[in-house]
Image 1: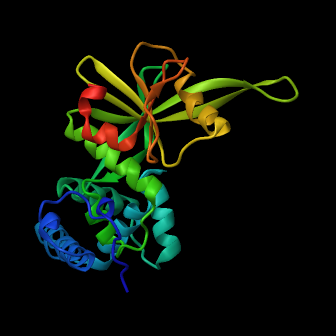
Image 2: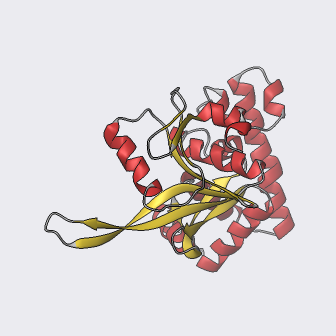
Image 3: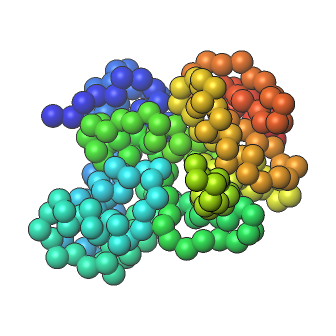
Length: 259
């Protein structure tokens, strides 16, 4: 039995949900919309016969939002859960169908120092987190991934193109040898000549956690703003390295802070 969302962040941003009075009504509406409008449209428009495979594949994608993946990884996950003989070409095609139906979108990996895009894997995000949660029966409401998805959607709403940043850094091991480590910046957002580097953090940070989150932002130097957005209520401040720590809600509600 589906679990009902407990608060507004889990029902997404579709206008109709605002007029509904309780979580049960919101959950029911989103589930019907997902199944009777989005899925039905994809199935009928593309003449899909194996509808169970389509639904199961979309659930795999929904479970992996915010995680690096590609059709090969999706295929492996899919085959571990089902006895389907679905091909990787079919997965490619279905992912295109999901994007064409405005259910999901993707973020590519961008080498910040090398100033170039890297091939697969990608990160997939849902156009609306309420539809994502409805796809999974409101069973997997992971705050960390949902926060990333919401930020991704907000940045795109503001006109930014959004990538996942990677940066290589040399690290000295205990024996003195140097090794190369690849660090990740959650979002590299570009709009014309403007750019933002953003790390998404759910909880308030202790010194060790802050050091970890800053490591990728300090691994390269340029003049564009670098932000750490925190879901917990924290004061907004710039540290000595010029990195702005900001409360998530201030960022979402007051875009003039950074744009």
